[in-house]
Amino acid sequence: MKHFSMILLTLCALTFFVAQYVAAEEAPTYAERLGFPKDARVVIFHNDDAGLSHESNEASIRGVEEGLITSWSVMMPCAWVPEINAYLKEHPETCSGLHLTLTSEWDKYRWRPLSCVENHPGLADPDGFLWDNVRLVAEHASADEIEAEIRAQIAAAEKMGMPISHLDTHMGTVFATEAYMLRYVAVGIEKQIPILLPGGHMTELRREDPDLAEKADAIRVVAETLWAAGLPVIDDVHTDSYGWNGPDKTDKFIETLRAMKPGITQVILHATVPTPNFDQISESGVKRGGDLNAMLDPRLKEVIKEEGIILTSWRELMARRKTVE
Image (cartoon, rainbow, N blue to C red; front, side, top):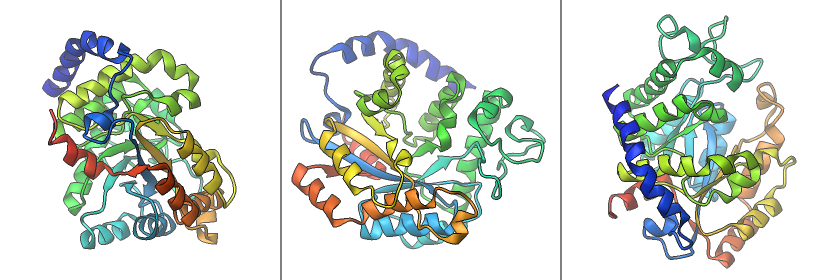
């Protein structure tokens, strides 16, 4: 717990500094602090759910090799992790993080914790699977158990020799409680692995969740702690695309990019190749296919060029962070 206490002390020490810093009218974006041009719009097209299914893996790989996807994250408890790991062994330069998986939400296809359920019973439902929603996780799992599972998933990836470019969260579960979030932050700092936690203007996030406005300054304090620990931070996250239905989402992404504010924004995708097999997992195959279609669409590539948008990855952000104060 020594590292956890250090995080709390650092947060307290930074509170006054950050309160002044974020109030400044011309506060630089994290993009600028990482060496990108002033007022640059920098985007990570990030695909969640690698390792979930063959279809998810295929879309992730096609999106990176043929399209605009610059980053993905892997669900370590899921059955198709060996396939994505085989790809990573041949392509170790890929920006591949861990999609920390603390829930198992589908009816026919479920997965279990990687940590020992006998030692951490709050992680699992009566059938031994991860709980099927965030509320039930928060009701049953202690922060110690959440940290144990985060560490187990990291350890599993390390044992397989998988690169870990960053950590993020399936269904937002690490943000379900303040205690969970601080363990997530502490592990990232201890392991020196970047984590998904926006610390800039958070325009898209505040639009999607108006209640976030009152928490924004507190989140910025945590983000500045990450920066002080030598990790990169992004300015904003866009999560809306999962709510866009249909196979053609390109116009929606174009609209999003043209309205985007300067800074680093992660655009979260769930690109998947829709198949009858994936339909047995989820009814979301068509709209997930829409994410893949957009990432492969030449029209979107042309708009990115016209708008002067810079694409990046977590690997690049970490490399940049090592070169700046």
